[in-house]
Length: 188
Image (cartoon, rainbow, N blue to C red; front, side):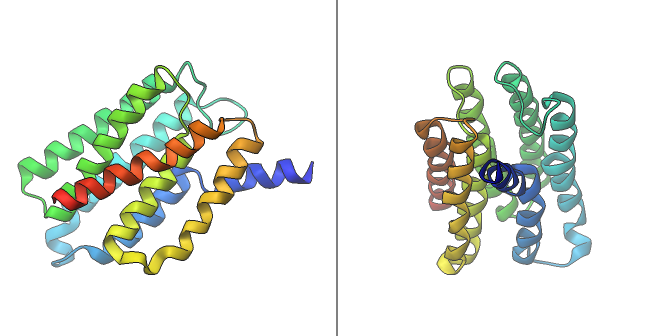
């Protein structure tokens, strides 16, 4: 019973909705210029990157936690993907700094892959969120954040232990976002 509770706690603490605000805070430290020139970009990021996903999670999650059932995942992910698409348009048409554009292009591509794959397979969104976050932090701060990668085996264990995902669903959920972020960063 203790092991199950520990796995649930790890899964909750490393949930994409929990780690997103932390990544946004780190993101703020990388933003150039004054707050007055950045406030519009930041408000749109918080709205589309945090508030809307939390709203969709509340609407679509199972009653027993913050997981979305497999049958509802395409709608949930599709709504989040649409929000990121709107955010990307705002950033590109509004002339946002490149760091904002790189962020949304990465998340848009990751979201597209996750939505596509989820029609056929229950890839781990928890590990995709963690993989995206760690890859972005690595791109912004270098390998000095390497110690944070200890979260990967913890969350990997928790999702497998709770029987939410298979080995392949968990590992690819983590690896796909890493590959996409590093490719987008290389191109940018």
